[in-house]
Image (cartoon, rainbow, N blue to C red; front, side, top):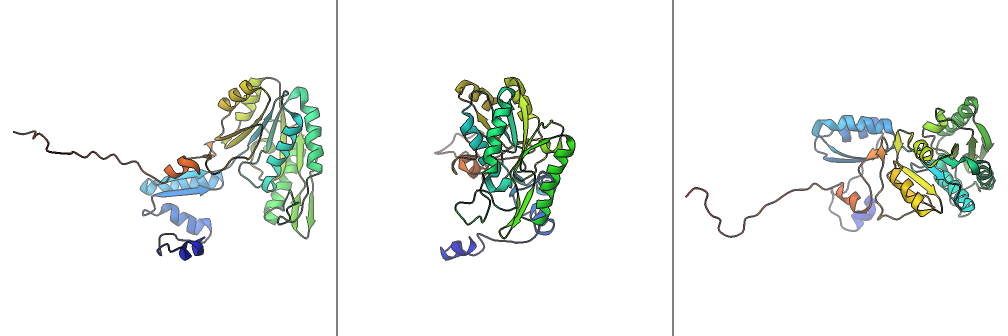
Amino acid sequence: MAEILSDAGMPAGVFNVVTGMGPEVGQAITEHDDIDMLSFTGSVDVGRRALIASAGNFKKLGLELGGKNPQVVFADADLADAADGVVFGLCFNAGQCCVSGSRLVVEKSIAREFAALVADKLKRVRMGDVFDPQTQLGAIVSPQHFEKILGYIESGKQDGANVACGGGAAETEHGRFVLPTLLTDVERTMAVARDEIFGPVLAMQTFETFEEAIEISNDSIFGLAASIWTKDLDKAIRAMRRVEAGRTWVNTTIAGGPELPIGGFKQSGNGRETGVYGVEEYTEVKSVHIALGKRDHWVK
């Protein structure tokens, strides 16, 4: 990007690239008094440290942090479409995505049928080289994160969750893969239901009433994104208004262009990126009053 901007004629010093690790470079940028605005995307813990470090000059912050995003499926949804969307929302970027739909909140009357549909699709997801257009699930970013995801799956099993599909790993010439995993019989208190795993692991919970669906969806420190699946438009709008999520999709997931503002509620951050609101994050409002013509003197 810097080379492109330089070739386009942008003056030196307008756009700068400073590389380095967070504890050194990131901390220095966050604390620096001459930097008035900082946009950070990452974990809640680092976002909290950025917030504290910014206090020196009351720096303006835009924070997009973690997510444990619900995909709410009502019994009246198109189940085939919803299952396909749920699988896409989980496997996008191998689940290493802040808006990954990692919580499945499904109406109890269709839970068994829907779990079977999702499991069938997850088993057929194509893993491989991310540069191959046919690949649907890429490798995990690092050995450490690979082990962390598998640790969460094991934690879910120990807590009583059932592995409906996946639950293991595969290592190939293209990297380390976590098999797309569906955990059922998940309780709200389990780590797999509360923590951002950042991998292709889907934790399924059930509900019986609309109010219970909203309660489960909002039972999280996060509020980044949510998907709602129903054919009832009134129900969709009611759910959209009640779910605490900065990005909400109805009968689709992880969709929309750069005109759509993105950001989170609660500990998923503050401020917005993209769209007009994203531009406004980098501006400050100044009020100016200009008197035109000769004014009457106050003191005669």
